[in-house]
Image (cartoon, rainbow, N blue to C red; front, side, top):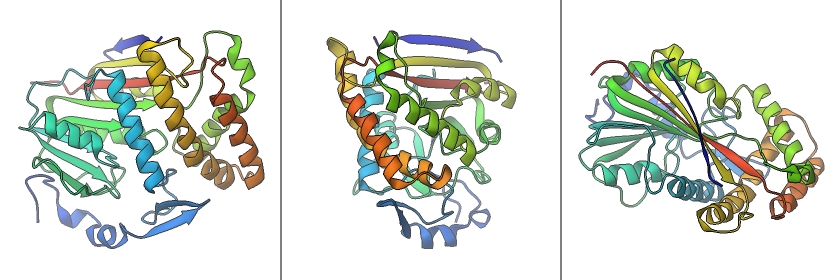
Length: 322
């Protein structure tokens, strides 16, 4: 039942980063990258404290790696949906997190320079020689002096306050003919029958997450706006593809059931990652109320008679020219 819906509308400076180090708060970043703060039993970045919703502890890193596996299954082993050139020379991964996408991309496209950008990128013991991680905030001014062939952003919903600015900066930092691609699940559940009526905790939880993230200023369900905003930024051939993905292993078999199994596991972790911080810090819920809501949603997640699925958005556009 993994289905496609498509909407298209025309609507020291290193050779890697090529950034003006003087424009970056490098000292502050370097000294604070290993400083953390703890809320609700989870670990968060201390740098620009409170600016980002997601924790960065081991549990969250495991969840993101599992989500990468889910993406890989959906894309049949591919790492992108945009029709990028066969031999991209320079690639930027925004919010690289554990770096697993950037590592896979660098390994697949060995002639490309790949740069992973994050506040606190993980530094594995071994990375491909054509990959480098940089400590930086993609919401700040970009200061790259050499443009990219492809810019990739995955699961940045809830981590961007101004998408117009982000897309404008990506446009300016792409070569003519280069692509920007955004990939993210929408924080909402769907069903093609009436089984979602038996998931009141889940539907309420998603509604509250949307409300809280909107109040926080970094929405988690505005993907339908991305194509229009990319077009506004100057991109051509902007395309939005939406893939339905089962949230639990309720399909009868095949790839869909396997996806549901993995998605169920990551969703169990995801609920714990972002629900407490949003509901308690933004909506001012009590901890006990949050625990009751999460317990109900987790119970519904395990009920395979509820045919819930999520929508995964792939939105990409091309900078005009050759």
